[in-house]
Length: 596
Image 1 (cartoon, one colour):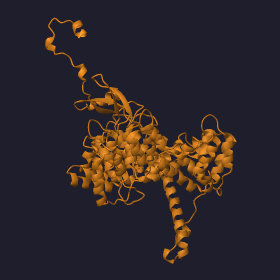
Image 2 (spheres, one colour):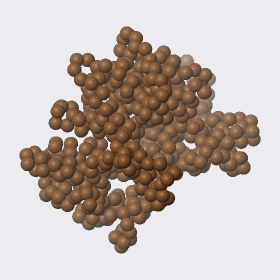
Image 3 (cartoon, rainbow, N blue to C red):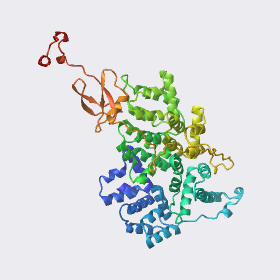
Image 4 (cartoon, one colour):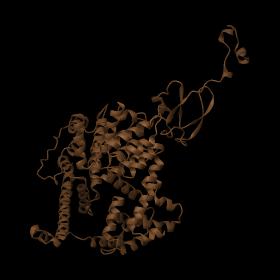
């Protein structure tokens, strides 16, 4: 308590991060288990930046049945433009944490004069953009050195003002595209796909401001979802969302319900940069008011959990440099992590590959091939855990190459995995989407736009093609905007669900847990054992062999609940040997056999 009270908020936040990395659980959950409700609330305030704590308190006051008006009066009445934190900081923190504006939340919970006074107070404290043309229209060469810093600040302020103006114009243009009968999809796709995700977020804010009080649907995303359908709607949803919101959507889809979608978690943890992993983690925790590390610990087990927690720290080397000597040493460590009987030390693979940069892992792959005359992928294939194997193989690739591979896999076979196309391409920012398209062409010798043309259909096809081909018009205004031609054809053959969660086509019913081992029969001389839900790697199980004998076995590393593993068949006891069949006469009765 003394440490938390004496340190500034930034230092307390650093203490919480260090605690989480060392103990693989949040400091908040550790304190909650040892403190009373009010004392825990006070300590929670010390672990968060002040603006985020006040935003959380207002959300709690508006949650559930009824609204705690006293809390709202105390917080709103105590904030202004000069307070620490200021009203603007708390307002922005609330929207960042809960993906809706503070004014929108107040409108849903308050009414009458209280609501009017609250909205008016927030609006009054909004600092309008300054007119800086006179100040910034100067010759830099004649500007005194002491004035350069102020000039740069003024230019940045002016740029932000122009950016907001462009977002306001774009928001009005989108409204014109979707207002009235029908939707002007060509103009809509051209505008959305020639902007970056950060600018699309500013457009969404401007759209809300323009439509506030004039329309029942003030959210840009909600209106676009209303005007679109099928996979077209799904792609646009991922497109308009921020990268963090898209990752939160993918995380929720992967962890909600029974069991965790390991592939969805792989895409998030393996393919994202450290900064994006940390941003998505912060966004998820802000939305749910719960630590993500604790949720992942409850969803995953064994080596999958270890790898996920390691990647969640966001400490993977991103320098892009490879150490050839270290690569040789690491290749030898990985080779030694596989025993001659086929067992693997999963922790060695995780500690090396999950911390290295893609360039270092590629150097390990080259060193391994040169030393052992076989691929590093073939060594990883000996890892028994299927999902862990996919993760480790993905760590060998740069993010753009990994996502290009995921798109290629979505195109292979009968039908197209449209969910993967929407999640990977729509969830990527404009530079990342263009990088994926370049990696796709480099790896497979074909243009991603042509692959989408062949595998997708309707407006969904057009928006996907535009997103991976059109440049950012605000970054490069001179670049030509060439939209794919509109062709009359049957709209998306498979329609996703209309729910707010990540839609997906109706999948085949999953097999029951007992049927999972069927796809990989045990080797000769062994039988399979399925790990029960309450056991994991290292657990001792008492099992009965097909011969009827009871035996104690240990669950190997990398094998979690519901997964099978092979156990050597025990030798038959000598006491069970039967007389030779030749001594039985043809007329021997069943009773004689029983007596014997």
